[in-house]
Amino acid sequence: MHVHAYAAPAAGQPLVPTTIERRDVGPHDILIEIQYAGICHSDIHTVNGDWGPQTFPVVPGHEIVGVVAEVGADVTRHTVGDRVGVGCMVNSCGDCAHCRNGDEQYCANGMVPTYAGVDRDGTTTQGGYSTHVVVDADYVLSVPQSLDPAAAAPLLCAGITTYAPLRRWGAGPGKKVAVVGLGGLGHMAVKIAHAMGAEVTVLSQSLKKQEDGLRLGADEYYATSDPNTFEQLAGRFDLIINTVSAGIDLNAYLGLLTVDGTLVNVGAPAEPLSLNAMTLISGRRNFAGSMIGGIALTQEMLDFCATHNIGSEIEVIPADRINQAYERVLASDVRYRFVIDTATLN
Image 1 (cartoon, rainbow, N blue to C red):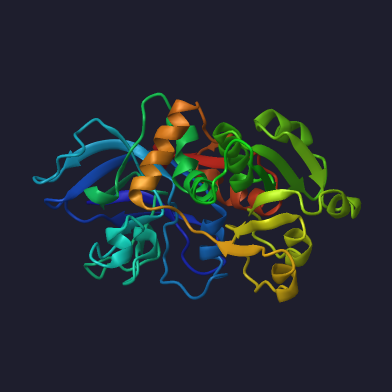
Image 2 (cartoon, rainbow, N blue to C red):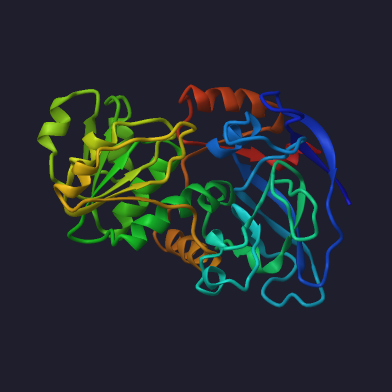
């Protein structure tokens, strides 16, 4: 079927209205009428070519919430009219050890991203800046009715990207967690860590978002531009979640960890990061990375957010403001996530 969409025609070019072809609904597929699609910094990196060459045109968008419009003959988990979501992946091999363990995002044969990827049928995947999408039912999430659908869209990337490491490294009562950066990812990390019961500190370049950080659930807020911050907080944290997509002084931040503490990178800067091994050795510290979560964990995250009434802080925009939104994201001029009203694509 032909559907309306916004696509990047070439690397670094503004997105433009277009139409794309969606495959027919197969026996295991679901057709989703998209209502909202979040704008992720990853979308911008991809269309700008920051992460390598892409096959253009590219329709970005992997924070998708909509309603089931049609189901395949063999689909039992979802029915027409259900509110559903699609995150950063739409397929994986299903057979490797990682897939069997519920870590489809680390599929040994390569998970299929929601856009700019090659699906199992050889076609290029196109994302959520569109009116409809057809997805294998195994990669479709149930979005609880208690969640605002627009505010729920960023949970499919920003939410699970921060929930996964917080859960894996045991954020909870008695744990001191620091969040580096209060942006699209960072504000979700603060909300989720607070709901898990951890003591939460925001580490940001300045104090200009301090009021927001405390309102969202942070217990403390420090400016990293102040060198006294790193002296004052040395050895304090059990877990640090670095959400920024730019280079940071890893050694300075690792010094904020207690013995056996972990710094987890979820931001993906275009340039390599470097560290001094002695910073790790001297405190038995850990430096780790984390992607999104598997399908089961993503569903767990959505249910957790529904229980704790957690949604993203959003600004809903029409499709014709996508390019301006990209500029504002790069200028850090959004609090804290843009979400496209896909009804404006028609």
